Image 1 (cartoon, one colour):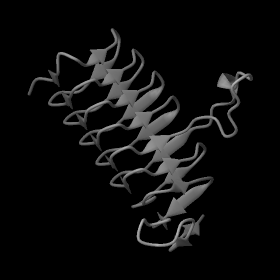
Image 2 (cartoon, helix red, strand yellow):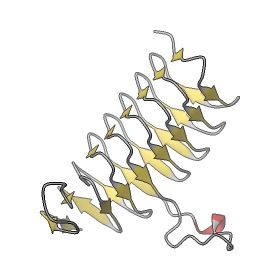
Image 3 (spheres, helix red, strand yellow):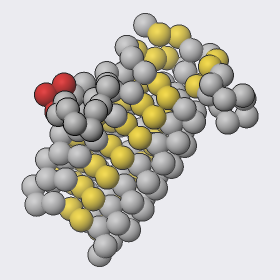
Length: 158
């Protein structure tokens, strides 16, 4: 099956996109990105140069996947969620040499509006509407919109 790329999308020369993948309105995929088969990228998604995305990954609207992020097969990224790659960014200090790797294991679901702090490994459903950070997280649901702001529950870290 052919790759489908909307006319408003920007796919830089050199990006690798697998068969059957769909790239919708205003998406930007950088030259070094490696994307598997049958993936879907909603409106206004950004995928950095040093990003690897497996097969059957769904990335909803307004998601930013920055450098040093790996998404294994069957990952779901909810609308407007974001990955980071620098732990303590500063406007006047270049930290590109300090990027930390983030790994999202097969089948994980990342909820709408969550932020995944760099250096994390997400191994199952995680991060509903706030943040996940550090080490390895299992079955984490963090700061649900139905709970008071900042509430954290059902977290275990390896």
